[in-house]
Image (tube, rainbow, N blue to C red; front, side, top):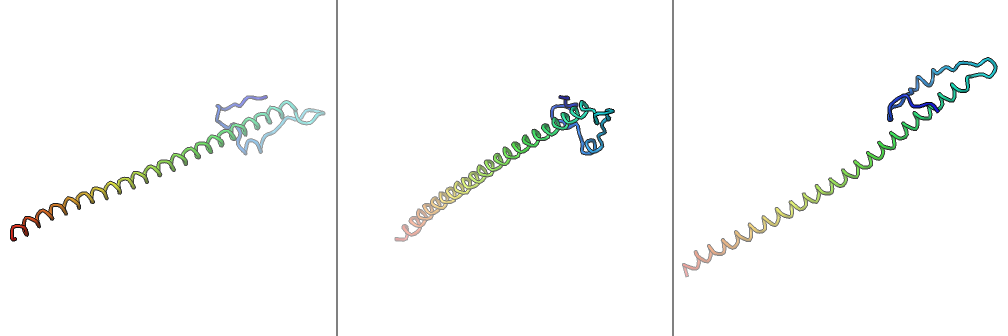
Length: 113
């Protein structure tokens, strides 16, 4: 089997190279079988590399989509928690203001009695 001439994740063949590949013709047997076998081994190796690259890309896309979903959920939870916290703070301020108002009313109206 011919080795892949590129690096581990590099495709050696282009569609143009495949289309224009020429084999030497042996006198009586047609194409040189060794050349054809070597070329087909290279084609198979490139397509395996391509399939591996695609599978890695699909896995990375799925991982990133899941991470994105998780981050969106966390962001929504933080936003909801922040709104609840703000509402609680506003309620506490309102209660405090009502108490103060009540004390002022007692002081103002209590002294007139």
